[in-house]
Figure 1 (spheres, rainbow, N blue to C red):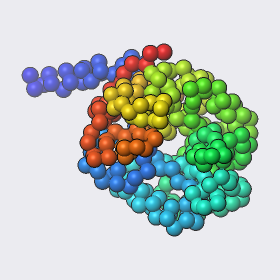
Figure 2 (cartoon, rainbow, N blue to C red; figure 1 turned 90 degrees about the horizontal axis):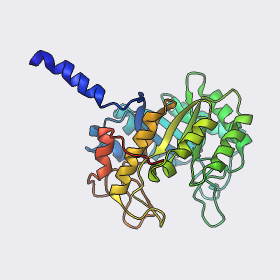
Figure 3 (cartoon, rainbow, N blue to C red; figure 1 turned 30 degrees about the horizontal axis):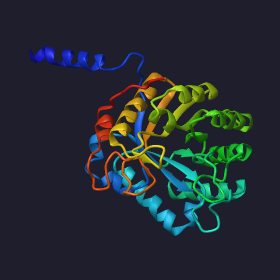
Figure 4 (cartoon, one colour; figure 1 turned 180 degrees about the vertical axis):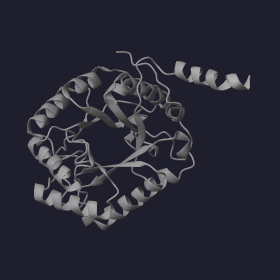
Length: 307
């Protein structure tokens, strides 16, 4: 009986893998260094971690300290680190895009401080536009030529051995504008980019596959789901529901397993938000209780996407 145990266990494991499934790396996108010291983090067995930093973090003592603490904590847990840059968080600069020269200079400062970080996304959610009343989002909307220059700058600064997520886009209920951004960027980006970062919240949380399929058709290379997951709460669009978020995480795994060009997914996010916050997609609550989605991620349990 003992001799039979290993082959039978292996057979069960093989049967549990859906037809057409492929290997991909699962990570977390979360801004808190405390994530990696939380006793609930290690059981998830995540291999990669993503942090969103202002492009000028090295010139801001507060941002540099937060980034340093996060990188140190993630490194201690042996995570493959991806840093995504975005707008400045300093007063008066949130709505401004840097010149290519200024952007390049900040990247060089980052590389000098953190030479071991070799996975870079030049700009986060480039198509999430800022509005006159709300600075949330990025000042990069409609600036695909500039974004291609940022991509080129990142390749130059970090060198040929670095992994560059050339473009990082957010989906929407209507993904057509995202497709337009991708196609316009590709006209300018040289050499040909290899990796797209895609945030497919609309598909996973509406239990759909159509937007992800369209983005894959528009992008010729690999796709990393640099933010994805189950939304517990988002304003009036998604009222608070931990069970719905767990089902969305199941759809997330189905999308990743069915598409061979999806090489990574980063669950956003580990930590839940306080009551009253507009957005919450945490696997654990603010009082550190597991939500239903935690088990879905721990088990890598695929679930239904309806269309």
